[in-house]
Amino acid sequence: EDQVTQSPEALRLQEGESSSLNCSYTVSGLRGLFWYRQDPGKGPEFLFTLYSAGEEKEKERLKATLTKKESFLHITAPKPEDSATYLCAASGGYQKVTFGIGTKLQVIP
Amino acid sequence: NAGVTQTPKFRVLKTGQSMTLLCAQDMNHEYMYWYRQDPGMGLRLIHYSVGEGTTAKGEVPDGYNVSRLKKQNFLLGLESAAPSQTSVYFCATSRTETYGYTFGSGTRLTVV
Image (cartoon, rainbow over all chains, first blue to last red; front, side, top):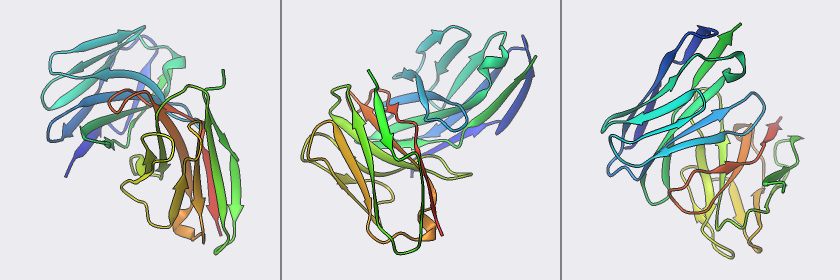
């Protein structure tokens, strides 16, 4: 059974304090690893897709990396507007996308 | 350019009542999905469609039906609502199977 586990469940950072969110996945034949941002009361917003180990993608203060077992979302010098829940999802087969529960990030001014 | 629009945004149903959730997209995407999101659980796929006139079951399809008569619309129906169907429902679209999804803003459904 495909599994996606995100850690920590919640993270509180001071503004400017860099950190990383972890997404461990167990899927047979990874077709894509996705990161989304979800603000309260809204739908998830697509951030990145990673397809193979070693791949990296960046967007503003966010950088996603991928290994054969996990993905990291690195947040550099976060700002309060980066506060949100970050979701990870892994595609392990045709229309088989497994979502993690998410990491709730709070950035304090 | 609205993207993905869900209606209604909120709804309260009594047990046994029926309703239809509408998802409309203007992105010309072939793939459309219905997910539910519950506290402490990841998003779970209810049904999906890979093109106009097609539908298929996802992970948690029981108690739901769907239709995709037009490419831009994907309807989710609850024939006889149950309290276990209290959830936030999200519609999503995608260009391809392994492309990132564009989600709607959600429908918060409460069944009492």
